[in-house]
Length: 197
Image 1 (tube, rainbow, N blue to C red):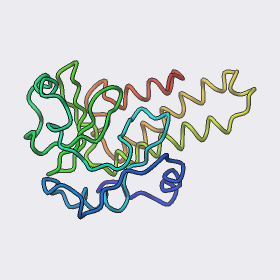
Image 2 (spheres, helix red, strand yellow):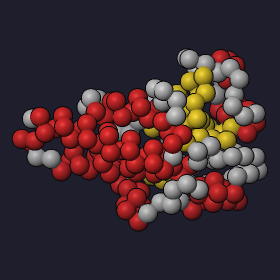
Image 3 (cartoon, helix red, strand yellow):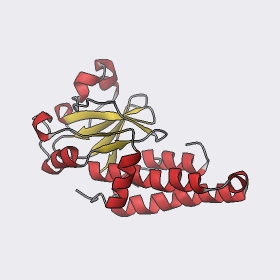
Image 4 (cartoon, rainbow, N blue to C red):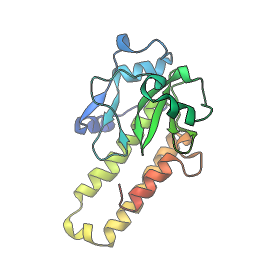
């Protein structure tokens, strides 16, 4: 896994509504990537209100994409990056399907309107790291600002600085997050810098 989740990152888990974990014995046999199996059993993905990611509530069983999404939507996606029987539905990100390749551990965004697939993260640890990083930088720092700062230029400057910091750090640990132009993370951080998130 690319990103060991630090104790500071684990603090974010305490602020999450819940954490998506799947015990090893309940994981589907098509999930063959060892690092992903261990990560899902031991660490999981924090579900935090206000983030641009939507995950199902518990109990969560990591359903196959083809069993969770209507057949016409899957067909509209065009040629998948890997065989469909390897893909699982994690949740949604900015109104698109967030999927997991059970063989490699890679995370893909499936855009049903555009009919495209985008590699979003090389593995689940970097997705989780990105969620923790965004929450720590955005939610915590903005909550710490007083009312005078929120109404002034300092607020705009803080938003832009947060977006730049998250981009630098996330690109450092997983370049896949920003490889395509106008990637998912580009859209998220544009919203952060503009105060839309």
